[in-house]
Image (cartoon, rainbow, N blue to C red; front, side, top):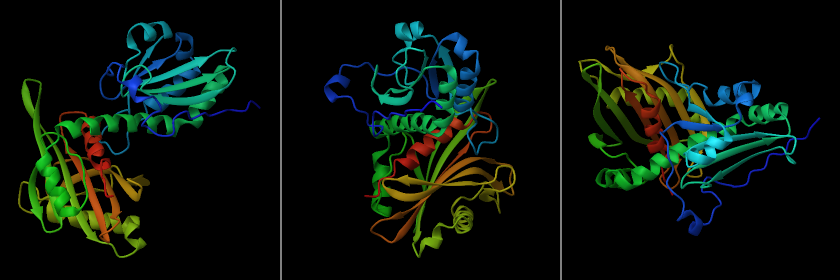
Amino acid sequence: MTRLYISIVCLTLLGCQSGSRDSYLPGYAGQVGEVIVVMNTSLWDGQTGSEIRSVLEESQYGLPQEEPYFKVIQVTESNFNRVLNTHRNVVWIQVSDTVTKDQFVFNKNTFSKGQMLLRIRAKNSLIANELISKNKAGIISLLQRAELNRIISRNKKFGPKSAEKKINEKFGFKITLQKGFEIVDEKPNSMWVKLERERPLGGFRHQISQNILIAEFPYNSRTDFLDSIILARKDSLTKLCLPGPNEGSYVTTDYEFVPPLITEIGVDEQYAKMLRGLWRMENNFMGGPYVSLITTHPTKDKLIYIEGFVFAPQFNKLEYLRELEAIIKSLKVK
């Protein structure tokens, strides 16, 4: 059986290119969520193309309708080298009997600043398919994190510094907000920030609301991270802090249509849990996706809870949710 060599050429998403070289690179091109897949057409039309599409076009969990992680655009090597090599996200698959080592590698800043380039090299299509399958989680994670980092970098330039300062003063940690977010409500242990905007569709203008709820709780023990306790605390918090438009309405969790998904992650070198799913408005017909994070403050014996939720009934919601996830994952507690 052929041995597969997985070579990770950069240890972090900060990349391994020199700063002096990067200064001469052009900026990346392409829309948020786009991925250029570089491979010949015969591979694309065969099993290898199906394998990479199944990875990149998998639906994001926690949305009311199916939306793939990425929009995939296939090009040949000649077209890529001529006009598309500065694209923000690139997956380059090369299959040839001249390949000396089967490998999956990634680089940042190869042809443009901020670019994420993943390369799969294999002697034949069977090995290429196996490399894609075995590295599915890594492919998604690298591309997702690259998109989040780009949003965070943009927010650092244009985000509302006064609101960020108030969050830091109140809770003792930093997050980077998106331009336009404003504080709309504040309680002793919580704060609600919101971005309201409109987009035209069908001759009308429709509301889009992105919200971040920040709260802190006393940290008692590791049992505070039990899923059941996290969900109970989440629902009591949103009921108290996120009232609806009519009497008796408030934000709560939808447990039936899309059950909450809770995963363990690390944020700023801290253990954390991330939640995904749908919210609904009790005694109302509003709803949408949310993404939440809970972790500990290393010096305050506090639990930090941050929830982002989207209301955009006329539109796809993945990119709005991705923007909220970037804000949440910009958390700095040290």
